[in-house]
Image 1 (tube, rainbow, N blue to C red):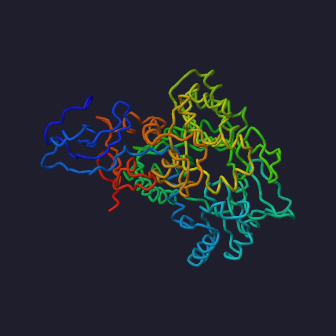
Image 2 (image 1 turned 45 degrees about the vertical axis):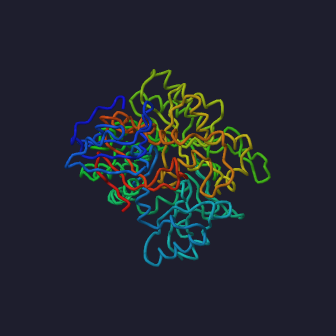
Length: 543
């Protein structure tokens, strides 16, 4: 094979033969074999690599199954997702009745104190809003706060609302909304910043909590072949948890931390962020800053250019919420860019996307070009005029493809309340690639699954697990493009492409072995990870 050294007999620690090896190397995207020596790729090629098998070499005969680089997840909440799995969660629930049963089971086993958990779906409840009365029938007079699956809403019991002093006269916070009954009393669902009205009375998550969450969370990452990631919301206790786990040699993956921008503070926090950036550990680098620009479409807090519609398809005048004032955002981004921070934007609505791009344009003019690789996560709605700006500004698209389908959220909670034109602007992965933009991908677990192949399947088909009509089929991308985005594309976002992201000679031997070749024996979503390897060492096995 061109560009691959001829291995000496017996010089490899591990050899994989007879598979379909996706390298994510444009010059040589597929080979059938690879060799590993001292934790690094020592050769890629074909049957000739059998010559590198010696008496101490581990030999894996792949029998045609797919091998990929270890996935890099560019947007995930590993520590908090793992912690949620250790508490009351709704991962196994399919509807409201099953959620009620899960709550009842948890209450029976935890008889005192706050009930904390999360993961319920808005699609299970009328208007996406469960009520306090239903929760009270199960938890009684106990305070309960249950986050929804996307983290942008919460379900509170009457006791929790009472402790927070939320009543009919309580105004909505500037960055959130209290769902109300017809008489103005709190209904039980809290959106965005309104969650904090109750959360401040609940027990704080400790560093020890997040250590346990991180250890559980990385098990899930490895199970799906994710060997590197960007932790998307690193608060001080989450950072301390990473430092403890990494410092004790227990952090399996290579991680970039996105330090949380506290929107209740101002520019004064930049000095704090700079100090926190210096606190790294082997495998953990807190070099990014997470800037939350808006909410989500399902609760009408995603920041949009044109009004949401009511149930009669008439404009409401609601343009969503800008969590950071656009003028302040320009100054924030310019300062962070000047200090060498990467900006990681939550930008879901088309106005939020434009605000992020406008801020990057101001920073580029003020500071000049650089290689920080600022990136916009979620990008549900992108105005066509803004698609080419990604490539022009060097901004990366950080896509969460699982959402790019006509699922319950789309059909019941999004489509009725936006124009047909905006509905067609969703998740424009194909348009972005055609315009020359760089794309990485992330799961956003626990908002979505950490199952990368499910995510990639949606990117390719634009349909979900239930099938149905595709969402914007012209925005579908090829399997190779999606695999590249979840490997090399995300590695570039993490500035780790020199070490990871592709299977090339000299790079770390981070790779995933599947149970079959879903590129031939589809569907992609059905492929299971048989083994995950980091530095040539198996860190997960399905058997």
